[in-house]
Amino acid sequence: NITFCTKPEPMFVDSMIHLIAVPIIDKGKAKGLNLKDLAKIFVNNVSPDTVVFFQAFGVPGQIDELFCQPLKEAGTPCHIVTAFRSDWVLEEFQINTRPQMLSANSAGDLEKARDFFDLLDIPSETLGSIKEAEVFENAKNALNYATTALVNQLALAYPSIDFQKVTKSLLKHVDLSTCQLSIGPGGYRMPFSVDALLAGSDMPECLSILKEAASVNFSTVLCYSEYLARKNHKAVLILGITNRENQKDLMAISPSLTLAETLKDRGLRIFLHDPHYSPEELNKLAPFCEAVSLESLPAELDAVIVMSAHSQYRYLSQDQLDAIISPGVKLIIDSTGIFSDYHFKHARYHQVGDGKINILK
Image (cartoon, rainbow, N blue to C red):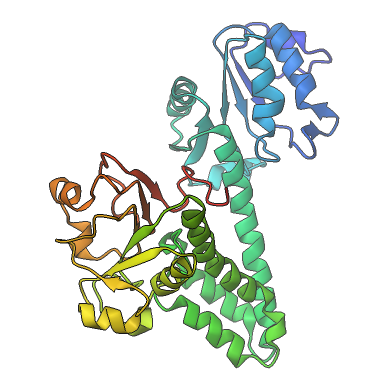
């Protein structure tokens, strides 16, 4: 039975699951519904061990600030989870084959959400926190929005091309699962395609998104260089100089050399290693660096940056890595993720974009 209530109290009688599905639009308000006011209602009425599902989202951090925190301060014992949805009509719900993304701020709360969706026989995946889920949902929509803007710009820059047809094929052939957070413009020869599109258009000024993308990707190199200098690192080892692992391809040179040069300009001593280049070749490519062997690394090293996922690095054992990484190394920055399963005794490990380091501070 569905009962419409004019007052909140009846909604809490014999009810252990609550769904909040009104879209949160601005500053915690959802068409007259304010999350702070909603929090007060729950503080005054909710039963212990109740599960509260948020199915609508707004600005990242709002649910924590305006709902979770007031309930926590009041000592209200309930489980707050998210199961954000975009299937707002029955037909969309029935044809949706994607797993439901769930989140919570504690493992216990997340387990409650998982149990509920297991009972409904709906597959689910989990995110690390409520704020992370809010970012995820907004980013998912923003990615679609930005992609639409890019193809609109391409249609303007290449007016003789049928972008109605090209876009349909383009979206079928682009595998976004290969996108990877990295220092600088990642991807095999992708920066060259950006340059080619700009060079081939009679109206490159229309392609502002590509120009901005190139600028943003390059700026990460500068951000990491400034971070290391700001944290008073003195000697850095860069592992690998190509984007594509296990290849000696000058066309696939990664931002390693730019990173090395910007670090050198900031007064750091830079050491370079790549198993596919001889020391003479590395010294020729980067005369401002010092080529080294993994068997005899300088004692003054205090940071290591992994830029290429070469097999020689990927298949190092824990003992071999312990022997290479001396106690003086205090920071490992991994642009590839190949060291994510290793344990470092003395060094702090950071995979690009893992939320463990704010490189702007």
